[in-house]
Image 1 (cartoon, rainbow, N blue to C red):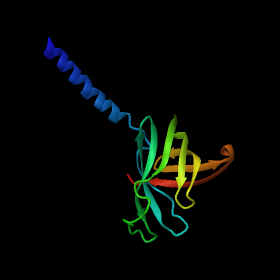
Image 2: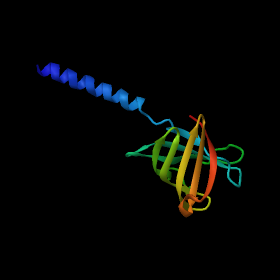
Image 3: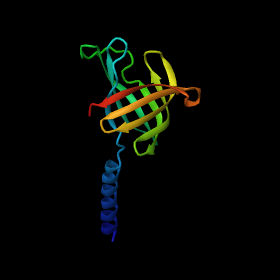
Image 4: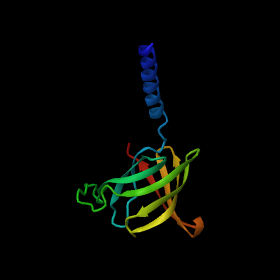
Length: 136
């Protein structure tokens, strides 16, 4: 009887493992930001962070596409506390803009391999945004 219960528990654990993989959010992955004022861009990895979504700076590149391994913000969270609202819409999070060193309320919209990312002030009346493209 113990073997049957143990087998059932293991089977359930394996099933739940596959279920969590299948339930990964569509926005999970690595995204390339739009080029900044100097032409450089970042790769931001978005994924689960507790019960919300976060985005962490994984790589930085100059305008020629050369990776900058010494970029001072590598590993820093750029997006946090983002919630999926359904149908490709995300809200409730914060985004940090490295160029201005400011944090904004954030929202995102996923459409295929494009992620529209916005940082907003004044209750969402004024927003600044970029279109990011999926790297993987």
